[in-house]
Length: 381
Image (tube, rainbow, N blue to C red):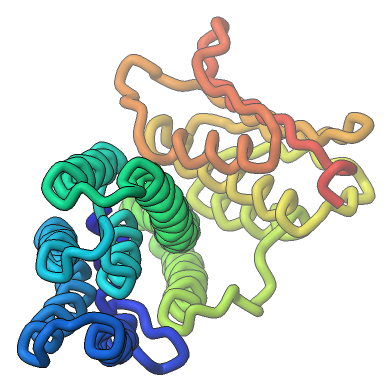
């Protein structure tokens, strides 16, 4: 109910005019109508009429901030005017304004409190009937009880509708914020995977090349240094592309590596002295860009792990097309006891499962470490 109060007290504009301002204008109109009616239809003095009319207008404004106080003030004014006039059970002018306040209070309070207001109205009606004893006290009491119930039911229903609409707007806003946050986190995770793949692979290759350079013939040193420089330039180029995407918020217009770039990747790793057997269908199958990139990154990360954990050991890579799937298998002799799971294998699994594929990595039982992945092709075109 507190949220309804925030809406009704001017937190939300209606046509450029706040609800509070509109209620003040309406309260002034109620004051004028009640005052005119009391002065023309009763024998109350001007001071009494002005006081009662002013109190009813004030109650209509007060009910927005303090619904119980506003309702009590309006009920007291209605009862006092009936006692002062002494003609009938209620005075129409103050009763009608009281019903308006009663309905407004029902917008702000709980159903239990609204029921309390209705019972209090019926009780005051009974007291006035016992004191004034008008001839039509029974019918008048029943009429007022029914009117009060209908007004409160309408007010409570409208209050529930306002609360539901307000809650729906908040839920939609929260859903939109959560969707934006999820998209941001997904993009950050994607960029983090790209950075990890680039840095882990190229830095591993550079480190192995630099280590191997110490044991090579000095005559081949220029070629070794050229290979190290090529790996560093490639790494810097890929990192610059990824960081440019991160700065600009663009999705990246530079071509991403794919199946056709595996030969260049393998040759760069072979320059470290690693023996690599690449079994790639000829001609290379055409793949969707996302699938081709995933295959490339899987091979890249597997080669990085092989160079890091089993330097000098041979690596076998098989790329196979099987109907609507493409399979990737990378094997190499591996001392798995010294390997701890890291972000690389986690990133590879996430890449494969994000495309609806499968991924598995671990000892094959014959002294080799095997990485296998199956990615759907036709479904994702």
